[in-house]
Length: 352
Image 1 (tube, one colour):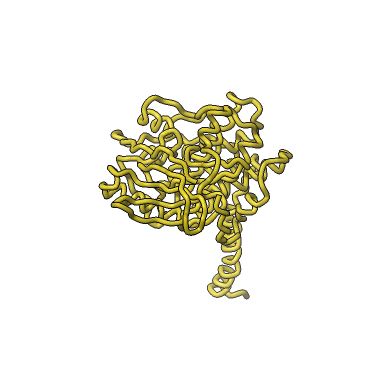
Image 2 (cartoon, rainbow, N blue to C red):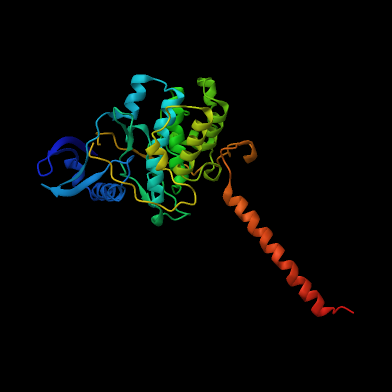
C-alpha cells in the first residue's frame, strides 16, 4: 500500500519516517480514504507505546504521512531471529502492547489489525504499535453489521472478525493473545494454507494448550492465554488495559524482576481511573510492513463453540467487579422494597 523512507526534517533537524502512498493506489478513492483514516486515527493518539504522527499532506498527487523514526525492527522479525522468547521478555513486550492498544481503546478506537509486523521494538526494548490503516472508531460500529469482505490478517484476527462481524476491543485482545502465544511457543495457534481455512479455524477450533509446546509456561499464565483466545468476546478480557493489568499482576506474583519498565505499568489505568492524555514520546517508527489482505468469506458464519473456562473464583487475577456491583445493586433494590410493601400491607389491613 505504501513505501516508507527515512528522511530529515530540515526545519527541526530531526530524523523522521515518511510513509508515501504508492502511485497506483493514489488514484484509488478507497485507498486514499484509508490512508487519510490511518493518519487521523494515529494523530489523535499520544502515547509512549504508539508511533507518533507529525504531519500529513499531498505532494505531486501522492498522499504522505510523516511519523517519528523508531530505531530497531518489528516484532515479527525478532521472532524469526530469536525463535521462542522467555517468559519475562514476552510479558514485557505484551504489557507494552496492551498499554498502547488500551490507550487507543480508551480513545474510542479499535486497531483491527494487531500483529507482530505492526509492533516496532527499539534496541532498549521499547515497543511501539503502528499502522492504524483499518482502525475503526467505536462510534461508527453497529452491533448488527456484517461484511462479506474481511479486512485483517488471517493469522491474527479474531473469530468475530473472521465471521465478518463488527470488531470489539476484545477483538484486539484476542489478537494480542495470538501474538503472545507465538512469542512463547514459537508458532501460531492455528495454521492453514488458505485464508479461508484460517478464518474457519479461528471461528470453530479450540486453541491448543501452550504448555504442550513450551512446558516452561506456568499453568496460571496458560489459563490467562486460553481465556484471551476464547471464541466468545464476552469470555475474554474486555479491553487491552484489563489484560495488561492481569499480566502485570501475574509478573509481580511470579517474582519476575525484569518484566516491565515502571513507566509502562503506570500507563495502564485502574478501572475507576479516567482517561489521561499521555506525554508524547521523544522523537526516536515506521517500517514498511505489508498491508493486510482482504479475505472474502463466501459461506455464512459457522456457529462457534464457546471456549471452556474455569470458574472465575479459581482465577485470582480476574475479579469481575461489574458483576459484583450488579449483585450489590440488586440487594439494595430488593431491600428497599421491604418497608414499602410493609406500608402497603398496613394500609390495606390496619393493625388492631
